Length: 296
Image 1 (spheres, rainbow, N blue to C red):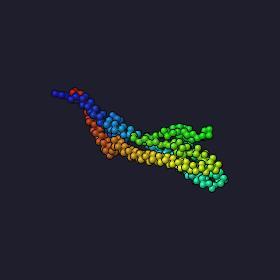
Image 2: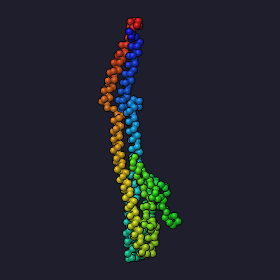
Image 3: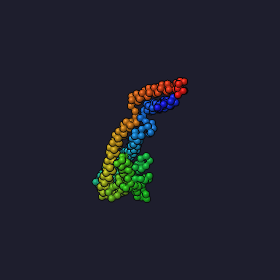
Image 4: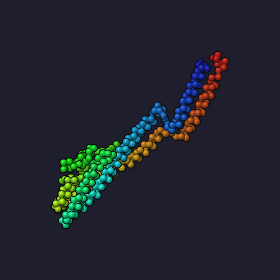
């Protein structure tokens, strides 16, 4: 016959009390934190899912930063090229007006002065910067365009592709270079404008007519660059919108994994408190020793 001793009864009651106290503490922690678990060991499966979701959210946040930088860079480039378009249009007007042979020396000289002024403005636009870095110089930190020993030199080539990864599968080029934008057929825009200024000073209508064609090619080059920038901008915006939808979904999934149902949690705390009070009562009775208990 198995005999239950007073000591074993007391030990069992105390053990049950400790277990119930721990259960109550866990319930209270869940309610105060608003989370299903505060330690991985409490729910390894949920913790693993939460870790995966948080990693996914971290990647989406990284892509968001890259997308914002890409959008800002592309917008800055498009704004600068919009100003270039205006100046190229004015060059076209000047060249057409001077090419018909009716303009006198005074008009041609005024046109020459304005052409050189526009050239300098275009140099400034070509050397536009974004966050202190040249927009149109590829990977270089030097100016995109400079006059060196009487000739125009470009920094950066079409192979200099600045890429921004805006999703797991989308990497977008966010730049064009000055050598691509300021092209005027067989020469660059600035050399062409220097020659146009010289032809205006000399009254060389043949040269001025040739400049007309070169200005058309320059306008086409600028238009192509803006088209590329616009296409890239649309792609980045589309991916960012998709990423935002994924972020909302991932946050909702994470809330499902981590966050508690407050009504359920309050009910659980009340239930655990009642069970704890019952365990306290049982323990109190078990330690009321009588002479018979001692004799056992």
